[in-house]
Image (cartoon, rainbow, N blue to C red; front, side):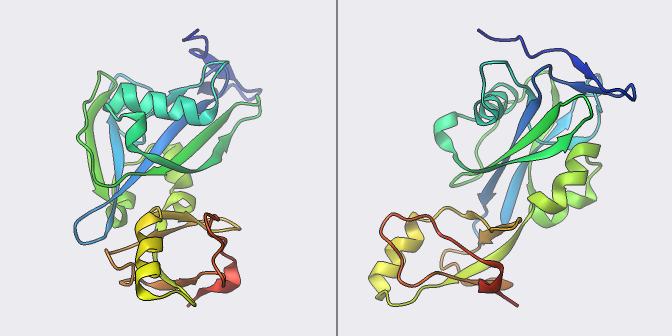
Length: 220
């Protein structure tokens, strides 16, 4: 079953939001050769809602879909991004309306900036350096959420691991790391060292465990 999500939700104040079951979009992040982060943005076709602005591939959720499924599907339809080429890191509700409608941004990363194929909903698809995103004419919803979604460079200090074990751990890590309490870190550079802040791993590191950061561990 597909397509039962298309349609407008009307809030008590008369504002309209697309998606009868809510909507979702994919914020996909990738590393450049120098370690800086780029994100995949969509320049919306002029005929579309909020046309001419920049945002992420996304659209209405169908009734049988999770937010992650909808966001990944929309990225495939609008940008030609294959589901098996990315790693989902988080999902955040980044907009709400009085009607009960929500927009969920699914955050993911991939090993490199992927080739894209646009459909009729996109005037352009572009990998944009993260520091340059705010300078674009952003979709109002995406612009309001960007300060929460953007990632700042971090590096990891790994205790009680020899150099080989530390290298293996770093190679297995995703580039985007969610920080408890909100916000994201980006492991910049092949050695994950060129960074503005330092995130310290818990010691010892359990085999196969997700990394757990606290605000106290993110040092100025």
